[in-house]
Length: 530
Ligand SMILES: Nc1ncnc2c1ncn2[C@@H]1O[C@H](COP(=O)(O)OP(=O)(O)O)[C@@H](O)[C@H]1O
Ligand SMILES: [Mg+2]
Image (cartoon, rainbow, N blue to C red; front, side):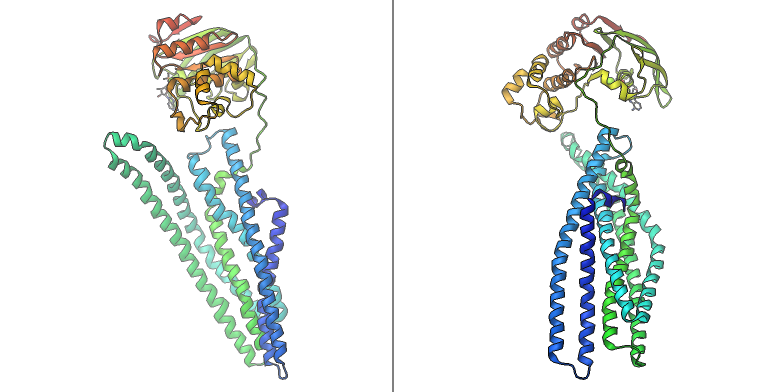
């Protein structure tokens, strides 16, 4: 029920009121048909009387219609609001906390959230209206023939016992389905992205086999799941019909025979039984579906419980005098990568690390930024120990990646990352980063395409530099920032990075020209060590 809290309270209250009206309307039909029969069976009944009751019936149906239309509207509106809130919470969590919690985020924000909507949210909403229907029908029934109503009520409990029998199996099949669905999404995305590579090397048929395996798995699991759900439904419906129609009808007829019950009341209660047996079966079925989707709900629970802190003001740069790295040690599953690394760097210093590919350069920068937690050693800025504390450490650093992430958005968004920046500062930054010409030619609103495919490698690298300069952080970490560029571009970019006044630079690279090496204050060549 927690999920319903994402909708506004007033909408939900309104929804409940409409569900009550809907239930009331449904029951009035049963009441009116009983009344009609009894009136007809009375000795001196008049035609007008029956006609009047029929008119009342039509009016009741009209009220039901109007209320049902409102009811449907409100239901969709609540689902919409819950979906928006849910997606907001999940993305908040993914963006603020990071995505380590989830194996396949894409599947989470598409399949899983859709599943939550259809299998959890909607079912809870419909349970509310089923309960209203059930309670009303029960009350009216009790008032008219308590014996029959009690029989009907007992008859509704038995299917619930049958029900519990199926729950575990359904949950198990649902879990397999959910897992294969997430694997399918991953393979589908790989296959779509890999078509060009596959066409080039004539491996289309293997690529199709690659995606067919999870497809078959997914569809078999879906078949299993729907079959176990639907067969359970059929069996429960069978039990409910025997218990809810055949037996009460038998007893009702016997009561009429012995003169203890009016025909009209039997008709009415049989009609009413629709209003409490069907909702009851539906409630079982819905609870089943909610239960079978509990694993998915659990997955998003951390996101639902998360409230993000406000991000800090990025316009106040941190200052520092010395950054000290001492006895840094890191290993990936027992393979040491960084082994007793020591370093002292002063404000404004430009340092270059040269080490072969796979040495651990990227790992070292991630340790500095607090993204990875060292197994030993400390990273201290002035007197502040920032070791493995991303909150504290990241504001000291900007980071230029070899393969920068580019949004499928316009140039402005890609450079500013969506925040508002004064035009003056922005223009200064793009001039420094060498983006002036691009902006002049294409404009700020130029859409750069998926992964920036409408930009050159050099332009992408300059965007990454502009982001760093805009952030105004005191230490720039450059991770193979120019490795994929030609010498001329590489030199141009180094001129930008290394001539920025007041900026401390730690660059790691596996190859770099001698001319560029000379631009640094200190070069640490680890090519021949370790
Ligand atoms: N997430 C990871 N899990 C396990 N091993 C990793 C991981 N990331 C990197 N490595 C390994 O650690 C070593 C150093 O990686 P990396 O820091 O990326 O090196 P460099 O940046 O110097 O090329 C490599 O052997 C790499 O295979
Ligand atoms: Mg690297």
